[in-house]
Amino acid sequence: MSFLATFRHGVHPPEHKELTSALTTRRMPFPAEVVLPVRQHAGKPAKVVVKKGDHVERGDIVAVADGFVSAPVHASVTGEVSSIEWWPHPDGSSAPAVRIAVSPHSAQIARERTVPDWRGLEPAQIVQAVQDAGVVGLGGAAFPTHVKLAPPKGTKVDTILLNGCECEPYLTTDHRVMVEQADRVIHGLRIMMRCTGAPRAVIGIEMNKPDAIEAIRRVLPKDLNVEVLPLRVKYPQGAEKMLVESVLGLEVPSGKLPISVGALVQNVASAATIAEVFETGLPLIERIVTVTGLGIRKPANLIVPVGTLLRDLLAACGGMTDDAREIVFGGPMMGQAQGNLDVPVTKGTTGVVVLSDAEVAREHVHPCIRCGKCLDACPVFLNPSLLGRYAQRDRWEDMESHHLNDCMLCGACSYVCPSNIPLSQMFGAAKTMLRRTKAADAALAANATATVKS
Image (cartoon, rainbow, N blue to C red; front, side, top):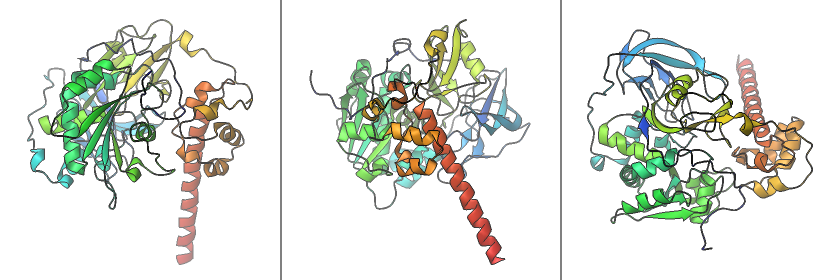
């Protein structure tokens, strides 16, 4: 077999992409209402700027960015603001959200907007335009895209890596974007290279997407230093640090970001969205969502207005089968199971996987047998077995000293564990506890300082 680029360790879960990989993307009917949480991105939540009774059109701003590491939220439909209230969020919490009742007689056509020529803009102006459009990473993490396009002073982008791996089982969103919007992917890449001054770009695509590789190669520009690099199929190759290792052969140091080795990683769908912003003037108000799994009657790749409720999305795919048992936002490795059909699709919702009863059979958890399989699977070379023992004893600080923060919660360790120990979930809970502990300590220190000064 010829050599294919990849990273060390990782796992090979069943792909299950055949349900939707060949299905052309279609637009779902507009629902009766949408719910737009102000927290749809990594960073500070947006601030609501509308009130009950306001009329909004598609693309109108409903919540402004609250700082640089933040992103605005825009109306995805034309309608009337029915309320601003706390609403169930896909992450299991509740968040302030803007509810919009969709105008039943509207054609839902966004008004024309002034589109600046990006070739005449300074890099800072491009960054601002991307932030104003509310663009975030569409691969799942939803990190504000404009922040990556403005790297810290003293750093330089040597290579832009476009992430076309989509290594999560079931999901085919990025696959369809590359096949159907190859020109837009390259256009967005061109804008990012102009903005960052990057002299080179590489588009990494796993070999299980040959039609995507062909589509992108067909439109590669001759005036840019851009190449497509086929990658061996392995999970979690779509993680930033893993992609940097696979493509560039570089290791991102512990606690650092890819920019520390001169790399900037963007999702292919994010690149296509940047191109759309500068082609139409429209902000990020809809996205492609893969609705799939053995528990859904009609799997599909759908263009979905942001804020669409889960129940409406499932109805657009024929509803669930009688043996449907679990609904996951995202893929089965890193996604989050849902307990409420009223949670909305957010900008970061890559897919909705409806699993059947046979796919979610519960396994009894046994004690760790020290087999070492989790060490061989971990892509960042942690010791999940040791971290798991610390987690069982609430030794959060010990977990941190053993590099818990480097854990991506990819789930590779949980997948290979013969004892069925939910290691990844334990590590996620530990990270939450550490954040809360540090926040409480900081608050106590601040109160103590204030008391001394008074």
